[in-house]
Image (cartoon, one colour):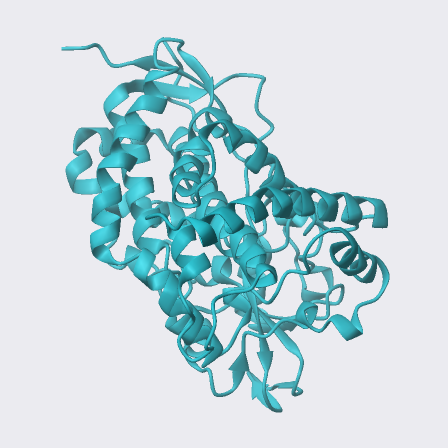
Length: 435
């Protein structure tokens, strides 16, 4: 029998700052469990300037909602888009893109209206309800197929065997990638995420850039084929559909940005991280696991929302002030940058009762900001929700009991300021007896 009675602590000794002077976010150990720091900031400094990054970090739910909805005062433009102002490793990476690949254009998340709205219209056609409904059976079948591949083993490394391939295979098919190239693409997205880490040397930044350029050349061949022979994939739509108001289709630099940032990282990595986080949370909360198993039809959708709320695969994104502003008495000059911290807002006790707990009866669970809000609300949210639903549905139906494999987990995450990604998750389990 597997010992499922004792919850496993993800981090036994999280960094718990007692004062604002001790608070920091741009630190690997703090990012490993940032929630005590978020608690302090929400209570004492809801608009706090991170001394290391210079960003104004916003942590309260209502403040985030207002900012996300206010496109008059806050811009999605990112300073990294201003190539003339790049220095150091960022400048060398830019030069490497120019020399060997394609300089990525601004991402969908880094544009303002009207460009954002015009570009988004192409993506929205791919995520319309009918298309998601058509994909649903494929997602369901893939979840059960992946589970069947290790269900008789009694053990798996869940991230690589389940959480990664489920959303990645789905998006690869939509992007025209070959099945045999899935794991190569995963190496490229991992490199992109690592390239957003802290304290990187120039060598590490350039390695990440070189990996992205490899991906660019792989997809460039697909772009060129689809221009000659369009098909029914999402990528074919992106390659061949003129952008309303632009008078042209996307160029190669724009396509390469949308492939890596908006599609593969935004459309697969975040779902992967939610799946692995959800199973980790169930291992830490055996009573929740028992309740979920008792009536999955009743509790499963709320569980999916609670996972996104509690672990927030996208911890936060930036906004730039369009004019001089004041927020909670803090002066923010035009051009300065906010970090809207979704993960902090998603545990705000002013909006969520018992915010640090999984509540399968929570009525406002879906009001979390894990998919952002406003004009930049995540277009892939409907597909992500279906992928999460079938991932956990198959897991609940196939597994009788499970626990984290003793001595094999450190439960560490990639040290990334914006994304929360579990490195690996080893579990032992007893499969359900076939009836």
